[in-house]
Image (spheres, one colour):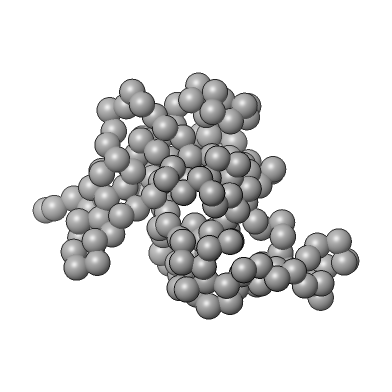
Length: 162
C-alpha cells in the first residue's frame, strides 16, 4: 500500500511515499523515515517496515504503523515516562542487534515498549517490559528484544491506583 512520489521539498534523492492506514487515512512520509525491522514484531514477522506516528503533540504515546498493512499498528511509549529506572540490558541489545553503545548514552538508539489499552478500561493499560523495541535512528533499523531473565512483566501496569 505504498506509492512513491518525487518530493517537492528535497533535492530529488529522497522520495515521498504515501502509506494507506485504517487509523490515519493516507500518510505521506519521506523514505528516510521508514524503519526496517528485519525480524518484524513478535507474532507479525512478515511485516518488516514501519513508521512512528506521534499520537498528538502532548501525548507520551506513539503509533508503530506497518507500512505494508494498513490495519496493523501498535501503541508505543518510552518506558522512562512511567519507570525512569527501566533500561534494556546493553548485553542483550548488543547480542540481538550487533549495535554498539548504551541506550542511556546514545542519541542514535531509542527505546520503546508496546502498550495494551483495554478499550473499555484505559486505566488498566499495560506495557510489555520484556519485549522492548530498540530503534537505531542512524541506520533506521529496529529490533524487538526478548529479555528472558527479567524482573519485569509483559503486562506491567502503567497507571498506579491511588
